[in-house]
Image 1 (cartoon, rainbow, N blue to C red):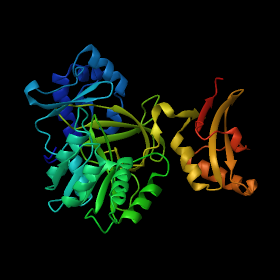
Image 2: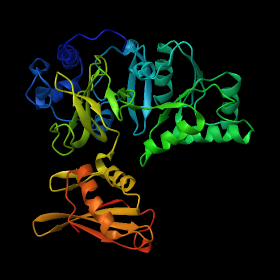
Image 3: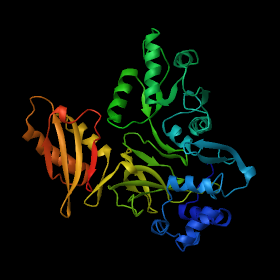
Length: 408
């Protein structure tokens, strides 16, 4: 929303949640199960007494009490749009949303304004992405070309003829667009006016791929962390990896099993509470995994890392979760390895972590192994119990990078 926030976000949270407690049965039930009321929330620790609500639980509640599962805390007349995300999950957009669930924050931070023409290739059909980005762009004063996905040749032509200065796209579709322009005989970056692009991030070496695209095409790439339920949660700050949390989202990084907030630096599920009065999700588990690096004065996480994976992809070893992203990061830092797989097993009462790795030909295993132990501990806070060097034939390219054999 575009309204000014109170100085104390906890005051704003109590007010929003009291309205929800009075009007939304599902919110009241959450508090009653915790034997609390919204007025009991005086700190981040108090908020953490509430259970985490998962997306699966929201879906189940919406099926039992359609369409919004008892979470709507506004009049029906206040609903501008209803988005449909996979599930299906129904997400209302209310009339007081003037900036696309906060997306204007991310565009303004990236320098987008009245001087820009922005090609928006995200879908406007059912899902919220296209419309919310559109509103966020318009809120900055920039002009939108609302394309949606597909039709690469037509969109490539629009980029040139309309003098597009910013492109919003998935990384894959952006690459399709630039390849299309080059196949049409246009030399980039000289042939276009594009200065920036909001691209969807990817797993693997996303930052490396991003830097290569920036260098090749003479643009500045920015990204954001958003979900259909909340819109924008975090945006980028210049020179910092990861995302600054936008002020209307209260973020905690929590143990995926207990919901307990974790210390800064530890990896866990991103749990979000909104200050929105009409769609007042509280302690909602996104299913995404990251670590927090900075805390705000009121006790919430104000900066998160790049995403490391999804909750269901994690394997727990000695009370610490390992995620596929951790293995990918190790591979990025140990270029002498072609592929790797981490296997967690249980021997008597102790959980053991073994890394199975494929080396490039001619590489000295002993040298790599020393660095590997150090980097793995940095990335996961766990010590490897063993490293097993295997041939490429023993680990196929599409083998899972993380395997749980504790109960095999």
